[in-house]
Length: 187
View 1 (cartoon, one colour):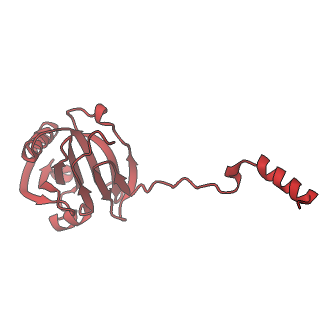
View 2 (cartoon, rainbow, N blue to C red; view 1 turned 90 degrees about the horizontal axis):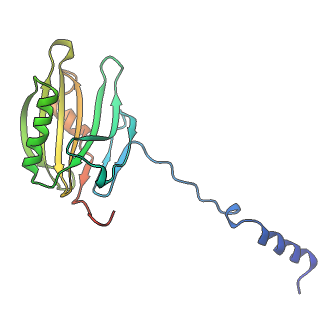
View 3 (spheres, helix red, strand yellow; view 1 turned 180 degrees about the vertical axis):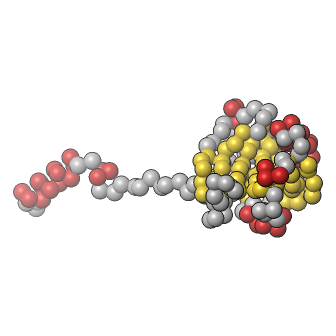
């Protein structure tokens, strides 16, 4: 038999919104990671996030768009890490050539070397290469991994002033990337 106190407690519980008792905290995004339907990357702890965004397939164009960035070092000698994507449905070698041409157009003195076919940490085929541009104190070196996922061309790069980073270090900084074929129609 319910007492008056029990009835009052039941009435109060029915009036209180159910969310007041068990609120789920919205998880704070980890800005050191970039994730989308076909890729995962974790930036090294020595880098600080600059920002990131998701771009729908419909909004991708033929030019690379930055979707995530991180920076390390001081203002006068920063190291920059970027993920860029663009619409691309062809073979890997075709995308790599297209991206190289984009770099040559942007940096008239671009010298591209040390090109090699490789793979990301989960086995996704990729091409690695290095680009040097500029002169004197403005000379910079970019270390690049690029791959295609069936729908997009993707570029992961780190840039530093010449002499500030070697190939082994750059590859280690970019090593936590994995990708799969883009799950078109399931995003």
